[in-house]
Length: 294
Image (cartoon, rainbow, N blue to C red):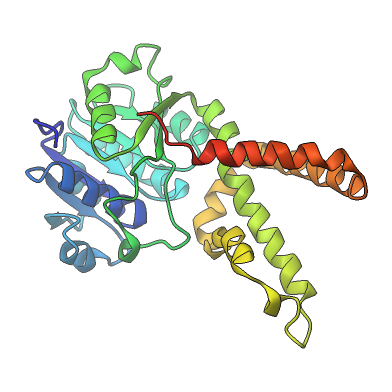
């Protein structure tokens, strides 16, 4: 367990899966930290019962005021809507960070509101589940997961800011792996490794549904392989709407690349030219299974 608490008071804005898990993870790593929460969705009682927060505050500006770390864990549109209030209420020496799945739009708008005083740091934990909400929050959610930190906003010296250094230390303390990048690179990368798998899962689900007849075939013959492949199909559209709207170009490019790969497989179904594709897939799978370096 770390020796010192990097932030004295943390305000979690949005106590869902990510915000709730972050709160639980921080309180586990730093039992003495004061974690307060704000959420419009009526999750206050559950957040308190689960021990995610020590107090729920019904007013956004009051929740942000007095915290030295403000953690915004809401969808993109809600995060952008809340920024002016948070920027106006946050203490001058506070750090404000977000957990949105796209970064270019969020960081651009944050730059308009956080020009002095409180510092904004874009962030994105690459962790989640197909279900959302405080009920599914888990202190171990971030364990061994990459955590994108956006270093470019505010200048090239962003990583020299002691507030940002402390947050990177906190990310490591809850088991995640900080990965520094810029907003545009982040959005391109997650378009391939996160957003494309989600849409592939949706498309495959549609194919299986449309092909299933009145006898239940082929779905009745499905084994664990299909269930494993379609795990992401359980994610609701409400969770993905803002992501698709704010990363459209990168996702469209990723879908084009997938279509090209599928066309290649179709072309070579009956010859051995398809074998290298399997070998490459095997290598990537093995790479993903290797333990990640801290």
